[in-house]
Length: 274
Image 1 (cartoon, helix red, strand yellow):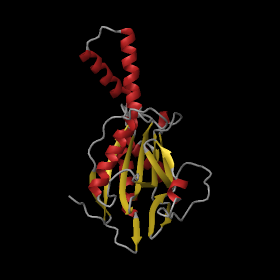
Image 2 (cartoon, helix red, strand yellow; image 1 turned 90 degrees about the vertical axis):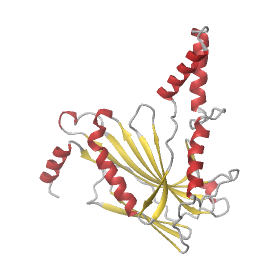
Image 3 (spheres, one colour; image 1 turned 30 degrees about the vertical axis):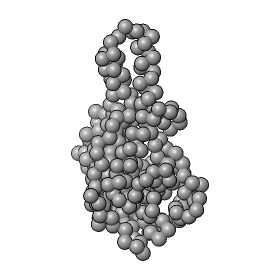
Image 4 (tube, helix red, strand yellow; image 1 turned 135 degrees about the vertical axis):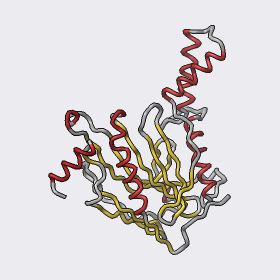
């Protein structure tokens, strides 16, 4: 595409950047007996990339525990992440970016203490919603936002007991509810089961309170208690401009998911189990 034509398209769309499928890379990794690949546009964010791992023997004794990290409620092994910046044009061009779309691939594991069949899509979907709720509403407050909603409630209750000790219980509960809505982690919508490129995935959405920023998760069983996650994050920096690039990002998400290929010596497609 010529530079002039690209400038005309950017002017019509009213943003620059985002995923450009005219320049792609194929990510190929081995997940034990699975060959996993997805096609991603080249990132438009310059960075120094460490050597990429291509072999993930996730179910070998102790391997997952040695390589896993914690990110909020997620205990995961990171496979790969790519990011694409959306930029303004015209009078906004010198301001901050409009936002960033990212795509990450992870391996996760159902904890041993949980009685969950990770090969049953409905069970894993219910577990993922529970994992979120249990983490942010934990009575124990700790790292990675553990018990964050509990902390918000405690702080608001202490504040009101100090400055408004005669407040009725109903008004107290309403004030705590408003504090959670303003800064807590909201409840999730029910998960869905989506067919993409021949495989059924558990899909669910997380969104930040009073923000358009959201995380969109596609989850696929692998083996035993292990499952694959592909997460798309829409980081919205200028909320009033999100509508400019939202549909472009959604189309890129759809195209990336349709590029996912997982080949196995064993059947991988898991039907929804009622």
